Image 1 (spheres, rainbow, N blue to C red):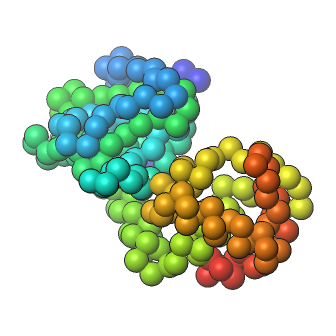
Image 2 (cartoon, rainbow, N blue to C red; image 1 turned 120 degrees about the vertical axis):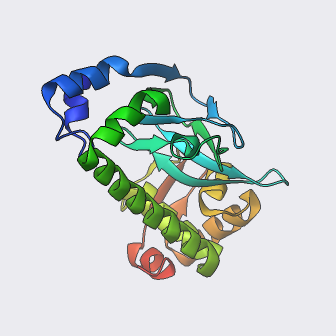
Image 3 (tube, one colour; image 1 turned 180 degrees about the vertical axis):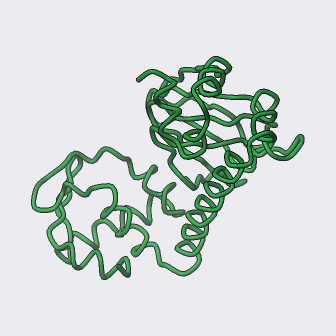
Length: 223
């Protein structure tokens, strides 16, 4: 899709005139990443705002013990930013890494700030987007604080394996990735999966998974 058309679909940019959209597209930098590439590490000063044109980007927190927590996955046609885009010299509180081959369209703070300052509607829409993202992170923190591992895992299965009800689908995320998404360990995820299987909620083998009792998983996930 032509970048001008892509930009016009976003509420942040949709009200800009054709000339402003063209100038915005011309000032963008496109970067491609392979699966597993690090875009930015925690602690780096990274003053950019970007759109995911293709692929997926994980926002990752890492502990001193080496455990990882995936706070969010940014998918195509979504916007994200480094903290230093808004706050001078602020370090990244989390890392960004690709979970598949990805293409990003980026703007530096220096390049985009004059347009934001001139355009109140653009700033307002970006503020609304920031609030929505804060609410999503709040939900994640609430789940980590108040839901047991089994409940978080049940929610992940329901969200990620939506097409697995009554039919087998490939297990396309590893135990380590599951653990990173729900803030647990590989061993606890493995035990919880097989408890679900023993109770008849799922059927699972080394390569495939099938949801047998959606209601049981929904009850476990408090949905």
